[in-house]
Image (cartoon, rainbow, N blue to C red; front, top):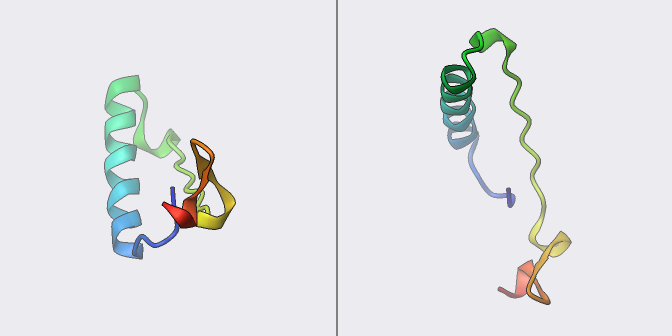
Length: 54
């Protein structure tokens, strides 16, 4: 995801993704690992346009 989300937003995202992934895959929550990769907008592009220019 792009940089800029707050710690609170990421905390909620990890909580919800863990719960729902465990439910869907019928796996224990303690077996789920969520990794968040933040990418600055100057390190990606879409349809030939750099993220910082969108």
